[in-house]
Length: 379
Ligand code: UD1
Ligand code: UDP
Image 1 (tube, rainbow, N blue to C red):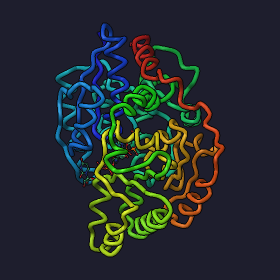
Image 2 (image 1 turned 60 degrees about the vertical axis):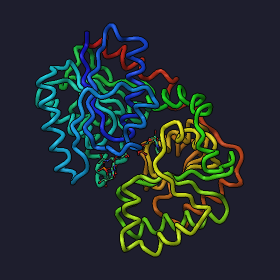
Image 3 (image 1 turned 180 degrees about the vertical axis):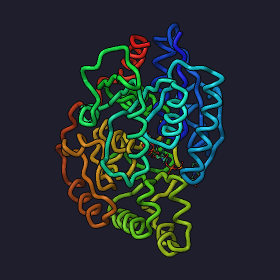
Image 4 (image 1 turned 90 degrees about the vertical axis):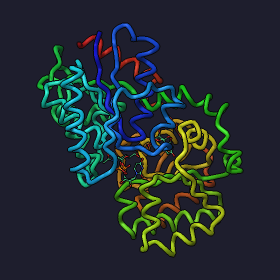
């Protein structure tokens, strides 16, 4: 039996973990056992617990309850907690998702204990080291033993950084194995899309009509923590709201920033604009129901830009670059950064465009199965 120590902490990691937990329970329970560890990076009910209930994820075996904080302090607390737990549990592998501080902490703690790392979402690069996520993902990749890239571009990035596509088992941190396997987030959207449509009442709850509203999310620190950028984005939303309803399930970090004195007047205007609906973060079913029925998505989220693509919706990405370059190359997404004029102009372009291409980029909905099989073959 292979004992996998899975670390989750931020909302998207909990969501990603559901695909792996499901694959293990359905097909590999006789060969893989999973210890689920929540660092507590996200802790509000609607940023964490809601996903366990809805997506059938087993309750975490441990919760480090680390909470929010400066990057160094937060990551350090996680390292201490994860190290203790790995010494106790003696896992065969640690399983890390994506690029958050929980990922980085897991990578550092495990590599010092010589616990091999499997990294799901390896190889993604923005080539922007100002992003905390870029530092986390580069570090994690270069400490990993099994690297699972969701896209061809991610796989090629690893080769450019010196990973050997011809490497042969036995894989170790000094002889890592790299794999292009599709995206566990696509597995989830594929699996839950119809269930969400059957169960979610979010459209009725907010009197939204299909294909008639814009779905937006906003939480990237480079947008929320720079007042001019946050102002420019919110002005763009206010403008678009003159033409279509804009629904914004808002990350708590962004809501806190809007409450700052510097944004007082802006926030007052936003609150008075009925067509710009700020709502609390929603469950996964509600979110993919909102995505499936939006006329367009505007986001700085990594996961939401992909889900827009999965559900064949045009997407305006409020970042200067993206790791998911294929989406932009396909013409289904445009990079607007925090430039309000670009956001508005792309909105108008797409409001009138009908034909778009959504080539198959993210696999066949069985990435988690491939990852489990590869793990079993190589342990
Ligand atoms: C983190 C990840 C980011 C990911 C995002 C997903 C890092 C460096 N960043 O960013 O890559 O895209 O999660 O959502 O790991 N807060 C709450 N309640 C919560 C969680 C957070 O109020 O349950 C507030 C706190 O004020 C906190 C702030 O949000 O300080 C930021 O949270 P944090 O986890 O540090 O970073 P995110 O912006 O969520
Ligand atoms: N999501 C959600 N509810 C929300 C906003 C997002 O369930 O109110 C989901 C979304 O469908 C996607 C994931 O959270 O699966 C993306 O997480 P987030 O945007 O927080 O982080 P990122 O992907 O940018 O790291």
